[in-house]
Length: 299
Image (cartoon, rainbow, N blue to C red):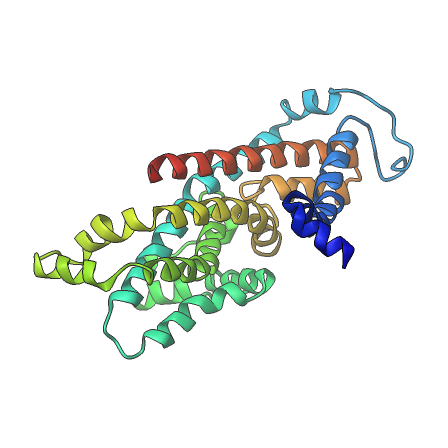
C-alpha cells in the first residue's frame, strides 16, 4: 500500500511504474535488436564467423551502393511505397464511406467481406494471388480469354514488367479492409446532421466524400497511411517470397527479400544487416514524414 500511496502523491512515479514494463519490452525486443543490426553492419559477420566477426567499418555500405542487385531491390521498394500505401488508404476510405453512407440492409455483411482478407495469413494471400495470375490456369487470364480479350493475357508473375505489380495488387487487396474498419470508426463519429444538411444542399456522394468526410477524418487517414507504409515494407517480403521468388531476374526483389537472400542463402550476415539498417532508417524517415504531413494538414 505504501507504494500505491507514494505513487498517488507523486504522479510522475505512478506514470513511471505504469510505463516501465512497456519500456523494458520495447527496449529488449525492438531497440536492442536495432542496435545489434547497426553493429553487425560494420562487421564481416558470416555463417562461419558469426560469433567473432571482424570490424570493417563502412566497407559494407560502400559495397552496397555499388551493388546492382541492391539498387534494383531499393528501386522496387520505392515503387511499391509510392503506389501501395496511397492506393490502399484511398480504397479503404472509399469503402468505409460507401458502407457507412449506404442504406443497404447487408452493410454488416459487406463489412465482413471486405475485412476478411486482412485476417488471412500473408502466405495464403500469396498462394491465392499466384493462382489468380497463373498464366494457364489463372482466373484472370481465363476471364480475359472468355471475354475475347486473350491478347491481353500475360504471364503476370513471370515477366519483368508485371511481376512487381502483382505483388502490389495482392498487398492492396489484403490491407484495404483492415484500414476500412479504422476509417469506419472515424466516420461513425461524424454527426449525421452534417450529411443531412449536405444532402439538403444538393451535395452528391463525391462532394460528401471530399468535402465532409475526408477533412473530418484526415488525422485517422494520416495514421493509417503510416501503418500502410510499414505494412508495405513488411508484407512485400512475404509476397515476393511466395509469389515470385524475387524474379524474374530480380524484377520483383525488394529490400527485405534481399536481406534474406544475403543473410540466409549466402551467409553474408554483415552485409545483410547493412541492407536491414538502411531499410530500418527508410521506414523511420517515411513514418516521421507521414506523421508530419498529416499533422500539418490537420491544422
